[in-house]
Image (cartoon, rainbow over all chains, first blue to last red; front, side, top):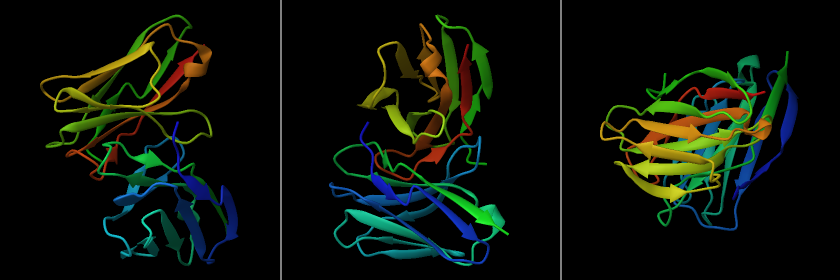
Length: 111
Length: 112
């Protein structure tokens, strides 16, 4: 199925380090969302972006809606062990009612 | 707790069988979405319903079908099950359109 390009695929970092991941698409989106999924659980919404150029923070998380509307990034500052999980981006368009999900970034944090 | 309820949480069944997964959306949400996630895979969109009507269709197999009832709960029916159908099936809901969607905790299906 159709998916966004999300990178990196996986990251192994030390506790306290900053993390950056991004999503790119050939299509324009009107909404960008970032989710985190813990093993065996459903994805949980972290940040929602609704306007090109928008920069939004949620605690140690910061996400931006790219100016071209074809990309978005998520930064996590000062990572902690509970940041471990899979992070998904998702793009939404007014033309379709479904969200398109990225392939996920698997994050491992070592103490 | 997202407010989206899925049952059952786990299900083990044999090939060739049929199962039904159930989803209750968040209060006030009209849209229900179904996604499939195989081991170490991303989320594959299956189908969306809005207020009882099919709104969008993704990579849903012909052996699978879904419906949304007047009380807005939804069911995903999987028939003639194959080993490859083993996956986590997520339901999600939203108020409608491309709104933020909220996921349930998923139904683990194992086909043996």
